[in-house]
Amino acid sequence: MISDDTFSDDTVVDVVIVGGGPSGATAACDLAGRGRNVVLLDRAGRIKPCGGAIPPRLISDFEIPDHLLVARVNCARMVSPTDKQVDMPIEGGFVGMVDREVFDEWLRERAAKAGAERRTGTFKRFERDEQGITIVHYETRNGDGKVVQNAVRTRTLIGADGALSAVAKQCLPGADRLPYVFAYHEIVRSPRDDSSFDGKRCDVYYQGAVSPDFYGWVFPHGDTVSVGTGSAHKGFSLRDSVGGLREAVGLGKVETIRREGAPIPLHPLPRWDDGKSVLLAGDAAGVVAPASGEGIYYAMIGGRLSAEAVDLYLETGDVRALRTARKHFMRMHGMVFRILGIMQWYWYSNDRRRERFVSICRDRDVQKLTWDAYMNKKLVRAKPIAHVRIFFKNLAHMAGLASAR
Image (cartoon, rainbow, N blue to C red):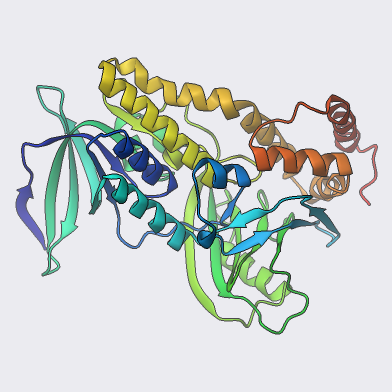
């Protein structure tokens, strides 16, 4: 049952942020820390399917405490369509693994401690009054289970509500047609008596049977393991694929703790703001890295840049300030996204190419530059000769002149 009453008041806050994932929670924390009045609106019980990998750059830049790291990975194993395995060890470092259920809630609580007001509800729509104030409408449930209509007045709105963003759909025509991969994973209990399971290694499966256009993964989370895959092919059964992958790696009979699925965008939107008072961040803006599917770091840096853009707009009243979030993000990471997009388009197209892609990963130059770029979140320019060697090796594999061992 829906109540006819709408609860609102005349208070105008500086910003409402819809979505309490890494991007929205980061924006809320940063803006509250700058003294802005922030309302962070998030749906109850939302957990995104995610491998949970975070690089050292994220841990450092966003001051993530050690207790949130459920595992420290020191190697990635690439598995080809013919089951050939290539280990890519991380020299002198590690990749942190987090449980998104715990990690996201910690980020939201940090935002609240910084001064953001947390509210639980479902965003429905926004409108503007004659003074240009944005009115955000959302639904909550009272103690009797009745749906209550609510509204909050704000100078700005950040939509950080995921790949199928309701905010984006309203403020940017065509945003809902953003291409995406649908990801699905199962969190299962880590095996206790299996000597073949390595809790410090991420396994990545480049096999058409696991995903016709993406990859599958087995990522350790300490006491649990994330087993998942993704695909843009609507007829492909992700649940069957994950079930088969679990059986193949010996996790078919361990306890299943939870199952989750959600879309992951493939390209940044060409525009993130509506030129008035609304700005997008995180998956809503499309900032998930192609090929790798990595999203946590890019979501959080996107949230930080959105906070800076909104703060500048609130300070100056110049709506052009909202454009700076995308401008700065693409300046920092646009080239990486373009390169990874080409890699996904070419190497993931069939199993013959996937076989060659895994073979390339044996190369020490490839391994070193891959980890340097991932860990530090920038293209590595310090070794031009290595880049040249990799370029010609890639050409040889693309042309079929190099063998896939």
